[in-house]
Length: 281
Image (cartoon, rainbow, N blue to C red; front, side):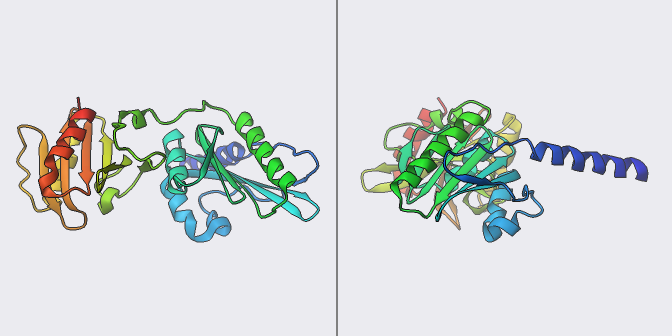
């Protein structure tokens, strides 16, 4: 048994090492490429991004490839993060995105902001950075970004779940994916979130999809119990209750979906019902 366990671990390490080596960084005309960086894995990601590593790990970080391109004093750094899957890549990308950035057609979605070019495609999150103010260097960084986007496998698309959110009042480019501890609760996970504006009111809508109606009911009951609310099943599948951390919560479920709305007051149930009905129709 011990020998079998050692062999299994050895094969996992070997296969993981081979898997980590399969990204070839593109050349960049006029720049000298330096790839003398280790391939960072979950156990040593802290060596590269220190405090931010925990966030990447929470989104299923697999490995990181780094290259540096130098032309005189001008330097461009390329980082390719491989996450567990497409949704995880969108999730970590969305945590570092701001609606104020200049969005561009790169991969599934990308943006340019103060010398940084970030985008995601398939299960990859790509970050390109230069501190140079040279116009030619900035253009070279954009060229590199397009080279990498074309090189990486997979389709350039946004998560299909985002299309479920109603468009009325939705803030553009503020959608996120939260893999763990939605609204600060350990029993709530894997939620897409969108923020909305209705008149003077701002609120958030979360969509959680489970594998079965039974899982949906179990999660709903856990939330109600944590909030100190009667967990008796609702005939309509809709609840309004007070969450000590998040104020008034509107929760509804149907089949394998849960919709949670926060940021509205008790007397705004009509708004909550309208959005909930649109999602669960």
